[in-house]
Image (cartoon, rainbow, N blue to C red; front, side, top):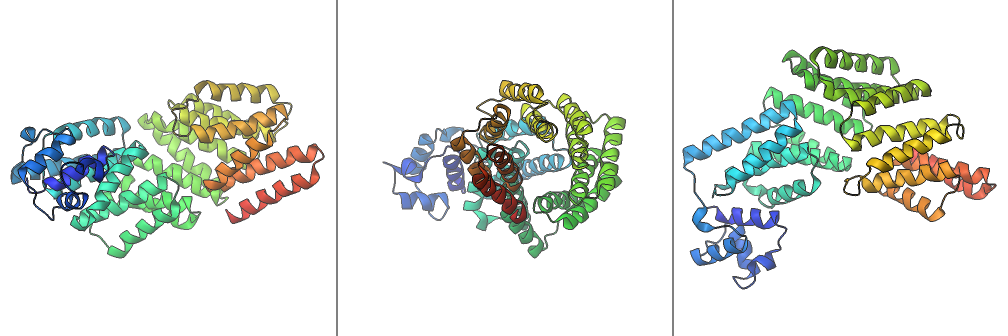
Length: 422
């Protein structure tokens, strides 16, 4: 059990336990720090007490042989590769449980623990589980001086995904640049996945040309190896890029190819997002009737309530810009629909609550200024320039109709500056 300190640190972080809490009555915090970093060899008595406080039975721990560790590492990398190609959430949940169960009684080497945590981090990223991602990332960063080249590459890549999911695009790009600086040796499949992720990040950073180049590179690999689910993802992202660049014909062609593949191969899980983006495309062409038609089709093909709400918000925006108050009853019904499925446990509950606050004000033509300011502050803090601008304009329009011209002008100006700076 030469690397038992890393196991202790891993379990302590997983349990959200402070060093002072674990060390209390057993050893000093500074000594625990040395144990966790394997710079000091503690007595069996101290180790046993630390493990007991972590609820780990020392007698149940097994040290695998070199051959067993090699086989476990190969299995972990197989899981990682499978996830890279298929990104299946059900598969991710199953493998998390398998890995956690397998390592419950293992006192593994630091290298194997690193691979375990890298793969678990990737699995939790697939599930967009922010809390667990943070714990595994914290442990990996605490021992990053022990990582070999491939492990370091994986950590950079997973950090790029983590910060992308948490809307910190600058940090995401920072870790992409770290990968490019190091020129790591990776497989073609891994390279294709990295190009796809890079494209997503560049798209979020409004670097449309870079995004298109990266996603096309990934698309070439996925289609030539018949990874068609990944190819559909690429076509969807290309459609978004082309739409953002106002190349609407190219966007339409990309979505058409995506739909063709999903129909031919019965990849129905993609239909919700494709129809949603077709709705966005028709909205950009000021065809609200067609846009709403596709948003409704999108909702019908989505199983996740959170994703349904996204399409409903777009419907609300279309109805609001197209003949309000003639669509007042429809607006009300869609707001009630969101409220019926919106659960406080939803990770995006706060965000959706602020969207609804604004649309309810529009529906009733009675905005609460305090609630408006709170909603706008939320979008501003999240650097969501698009929604900040949209709702500033909405409230400005309400104030203007109410004869509050000076206040309206201030909100119109906020909307303009946010749109320009964003």
